[in-house]
Figure 1 (cartoon, helix red, strand yellow):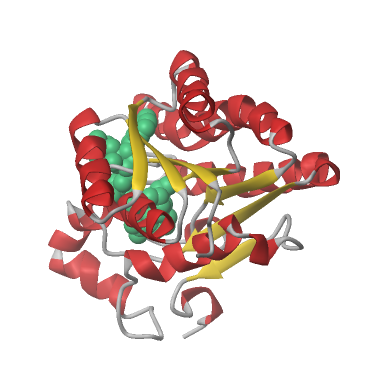
Figure 2 (tube, rainbow, N blue to C red):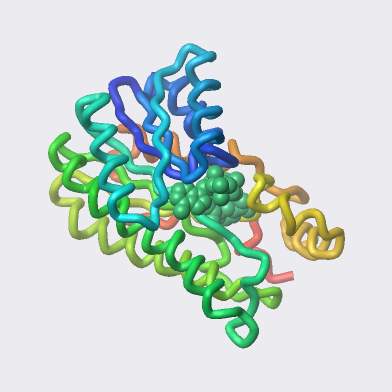
Length: 255
Ligand code: NAP
C-alpha cells in the first residue's frame, strides 16, 4: 500500500475532493485525520472509511480559527503518535465573489480567511509536528484560475489561490532542508458540491466553461486526488516547490 504507516491530516474532508481523498488515502493504508467545519459531514466521511475497513478519526475544526488548527494537529499526534502529511484542501468559492469593482468587502475577506489564513494556520501548527516526525509532505490546493486571467472573474478567489502558490514555494525552500516537501495542485473545474451547488446549475455559465476544456468534460475528484496520493507518498520524495496543473488542458488552450 502506497501510504502504509503514514498519518495524513486532510482539511475540508467532509465533502468533494477532501472526502474522496480521505477514502483513497485510507485504502492505501494511511491513518486519516479527517477535518471539516461541518461535524456531521466529516463524521459521515469517517463512517464510510471505517465501513470500508480503513482507519480515520473525525475532527470538527474551522481552519480560520487558530485554536481549532492547534487542536486538529494535537488530535493527530495524540491519536496516531505523529503527523506525516498535511493536505490543505479546505476552500470556499462564493457566488458574490466577482470583479474587484463589485465584490463586497466582507465577501473578499471571507474568501481570503478560509483560503489563505486557513493554509497559514494549519501549516503553523502542522510543521512542528512534521519536523518531529523527521519530515513530511504539505499538499496545498490552489486553482488553475491563479495562473490565467478570467473574463468571468472571481477576484478574491483568484487572488487567494495565487497566495497559496506563493506560500507553497516559500515553505518548500524554508523547510525542504529539514525534509518537508511542499507542493501545490492547481485543479481545473471539478464536479464537486463547490461547483455543482450553484455555478453548474446555470446552463449558460456551464456552457461557457465547458467550451474552454480541451478534454470536453469537467474533472472528477479522482483526477486530482490521485496526484495528491503521489504527493503524500514517498514516491514524490524529490518533488518540492512544484505547482502541478490538472485541468484537462484549459491553461494550454489559446482558442
Ligand atoms: P467542497 O465540496 O465545497 O468541499 C470543501 C469542504 O471544505 C466542505 O466540506 C466545506 O464545508 C469545508 N470547509 C469550508 N470552509 C471551511 C473551514 N473554514 N474550515 C474547515 N473546513 C471548511 O469543495 P471542493 O470542490 O472539494 O474543493 C476542495 C478544494 O479544491 C478547495 O480548496 C477549492 O478551492 C479547490 N478547488 C476546487 C475546484 C472545483 O472546481 N471544485 C477547482 C479548483 C480548486 P461546508 O460545505 O460546510 O462549507
